[in-house]
Image (cartoon, rainbow, N blue to C red):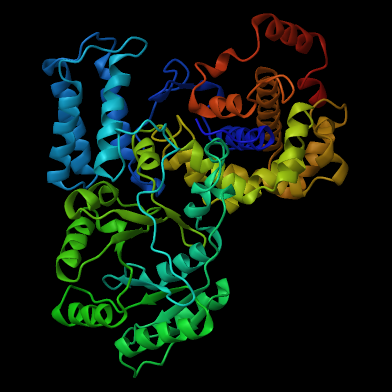
Length: 583
């Protein structure tokens, strides 16, 4: 497992508990995991069928695979009779998720070869071994390699882009149908190359031990000087849109207006890049409603004129398996090097991510995960396979948090968690962090055990409750925000809470529930702190934090020994407790 600093891991675990605490019916203490699968204690939570209305991918597929794994039971040998119903259900789930039928059959055949007649390995169950086979097959189909020894989350992206110099700039040509999001993708790609692209040449020159413990967000960046070329002269306002995007991300845009030939625009953009020291040119080309000869001929002429190092096809994830067929058609006609899958946060069924490489043979290079210009990520097959199987994506969660939380903020959070001084100001910071990282649903999907176990109604209720909580905190005084006990155990708690709920337009019952949720989250953090021990007492302090997040700890409910829990319970009974503040 990739390791990160103790203080940052503490902040991420606090974030996980923060999200889990506001999802009604989902208890963070119900996490359970193994090397290959993370699942919930059925006695504590009954999984629900997730809804595509949650605006996340693979819910149905993840739910089906989880149910199939449970149905295998504690078998010691996987036979054809035992696996046949499972494979039939998985195939149906793949087709329902709009995976290409050829890819689905290939995946099923691969899983069958990996599992049939195999003895269940010592230390794992049949369902875990089945999910491992599914993981390996998904990894191979999406462009990864199950033959490598790297653990999930440590592998490199599916593909990296060609690099250039100021004398010989790299040219990246974007193609695709109209409406796929090419112009927006051009702006997102330019920002990524400018600020967040990892310099793997510099990483290769570093010590291997050092890089194995480093998050991608902390690795050296290439920091390219990018020039955008507006070669879509047909769609109304396409050039203006790119210019606005360029201004927003502080990247120069080259255009010659709508009357110029797109080939001339691309050629002169490259000449400008050479003259002014740009090392990368991203060319935004025109799209059509359907593939036609005019579109293909124009792309061919641009390619011949500027000889791009990369030709990336921008495809809409919401088109499902049609995205894979489209990729194959473009590759056959003009030749492409990879694909950018946009709108991966949409409400489609997600077959495109699984199908593109299997049908076209071309890798997915980037995925669009939101509407902001920052919402473009390299495609990691291992992380996507983990999310499809409902195992979450802890590494991406840590990287997103690391990009938003400074080292100083992480150390302050660590200190507060260790001293059990987490207050309402910290609560608001966590809410702000979730907003910066994307939607609440998007963050929840990265948490092991939550994917496929929360539905749209739960998420809407959680978001509504979160807004109420923020309104109540905004109605508190500075002293109350810094000292939560004034609203929990103090004798003035009830009158204070009545004033706060009146000021925020809430009911007193809402305020009491919020206090209960807040106290429960603080208790979980305190227990986790005792489990981890702290930076002085652990040889590898970051590891237990990530494991507690769902990456390897056997059972979170066991945090702290039985004697300490009983003592705490007795102390709570003998003291004033929560109820004393409202008496």
